[in-house]
Length: 283
Ligand SMILES: Nc1ncnc2c1ncn2[C@@H]1O[C@H](COP(=O)(O)OP(=O)(O)OP(=O)(O)O)[C@@H](O)[C@H]1O
Ligand SMILES: [Mg+2]
Image 1 (tube, rainbow, N blue to C red):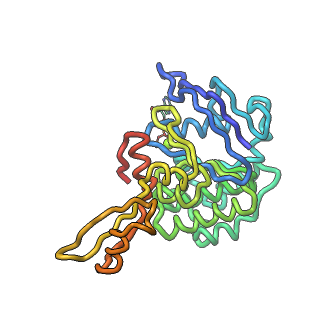
Image 2: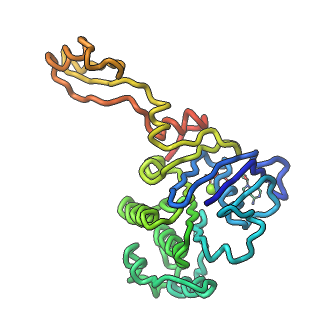
């Protein structure tokens, strides 16, 4: 669906490249996560992929064709959720959607989606009176307006409460189920783990790792089993995963002690984020 090779970009006002030769590709029906610390170049990359920042070096191909060879028709195919919701604050939610909807030859019936994200009752309220989370949800509905083949979502759940975040994530999963492709930027590692088929970690404009969340966790994790058991106090011990069935110390522990917790040692995407990018998450 999208192939990026040796992409480089410098803002006209900048003196250094902020995107420094990145390459990746993702297929139709895939949710591709783009993860990395603040300032790494995630939003810049999204803007390059959708053609609103021009003058990059390297290559971006969309469905096998160079991005530059497309005209405005590409915007019929893609839905975009920007990092900062852009709405006309003096217009109501419905008027905003109506305005953007008129730009597309094909658009969805917004009623079911507005109901699902909990904005139907507020549809005639001016966006100026919306809370932050309401604006984020409206931004998402707007991205879906043209029934896109592909979605670019820049932090679609930031600022949402867990219940609303769950609804947005479910819609994204259903969208993929129906054949949609998603480029997803997020700081929420748990969401990335749940939603993404593959993720790329970007830091300082360079890609550090690309793989499925599961492979990353296996690669970065230790093949160990960690056990907490009760003895005099709470004791902790680790055993290598390999040869566990014949490990007499392990088996003896299971037979003779009260096990409190037992976990395999695969790591989380949060841990991998820190290892790969060198930056601690504050979220
Ligand atoms: N309009 C701009 N003009 C000049 N430099 C910019 C502009 N927008 C972003 N940058 C710079 O480009 C780099 C990458 O920024 P970008 O917005 O892509 O980061 P990000 O990974 O999306 O970060 P965040 O997680 O904070 O959203 C930063 O160093 C930033 O200062
Ligand atoms: Mg950003």
